[in-house]
Image (cartoon, one colour):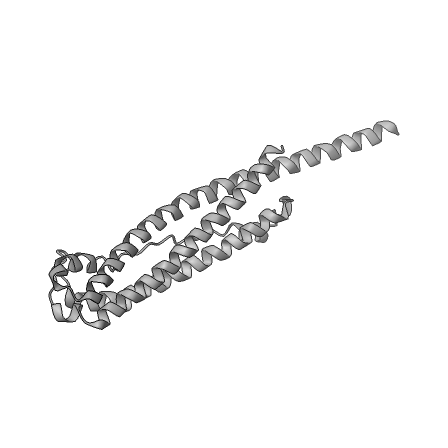
Length: 204
């Protein structure tokens, strides 16, 4: 009888150990993926910020009406069609949920962070779609009339110094600044999740 109980305890202990190993493997894989996402988002932040500064400078030129800087304005205007695009398609939390693998992860705080991070990614994708639509619907048609895309030479000076063009750039900057905030929010959430995972990995 004692031997049977001991065997059952050993079997239960082995099962817990295997479950823990599986859980840690999932944590390592998740960490790898979101660390890669972090690098991509950091690149998009840098790319986005570079153009925000350019476009704000263009706004200042237009607001001052300083036509002596029209060549600079033209070079910036041809960049209005550039945009950051993280476009994350992977759904870690939903995949874990649908596959039943979420039951393996015992730390509910990590699961919640992954859920919130996925929501953050969806918000990023929505804003990037809005940015893309704005470029295709308004920016390219307008700049095609005013700027030579290859050289940045202004074709129609009166049109580019019109308030409509200024408002177009203002709208783009607003979209890009919102994207910047969401990118940074995602980075913070990734850092929090990685810290939680690291604590789990240390407790093997």
